[in-house]
Amino acid sequence: MPEKKTIKRARKLKREGKSPSTQAGEFVREEIHHVREGKHGARSPEQAIAIGLSKARRAGVRLPPPKKGKSTAAVRRSAVSALRKGRSRQEPSAARSRATLRALRDEKRGTASASSLSRHARSAAHKRGPRDLSDAAKKAARTRARH
Image 1 (cartoon, rainbow, N blue to C red):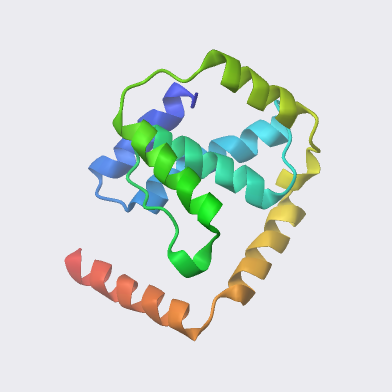
Image 2: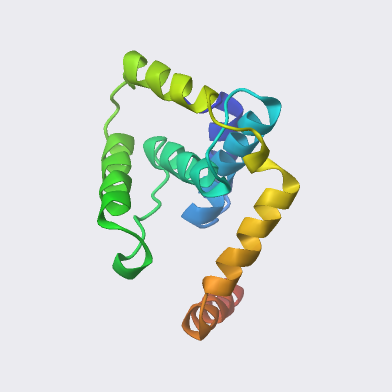
């Protein structure tokens, strides 16, 4: 369950008209913070980010699942499931939450360090091709025109 202040910050961003990925960033920030403070660990920076995105979807952020070429079918299924959970107001299962936390407690804490996240950001940037960069530039131009 995300912290109340995280949900509050995400809602504020939504009111300001920010994109779903910006809203989801608050949940990812919370997750990184949890790993750093030792609440639990993560196997990799990607896992910590994925947990944050899933929390965002379950909290009602309309973050679409990744596109077909960008991820595996299992990841897309999981994202669709989290989105569905976010639309229904069903309480999370206590047993499942406990089991997840217990499994994550065994993982290492260094995955949320500045150097690990920096390495992840660099490798993610290298994977982006000219098409991705062009799309990002077009989106930036659109949002500039809107404001």
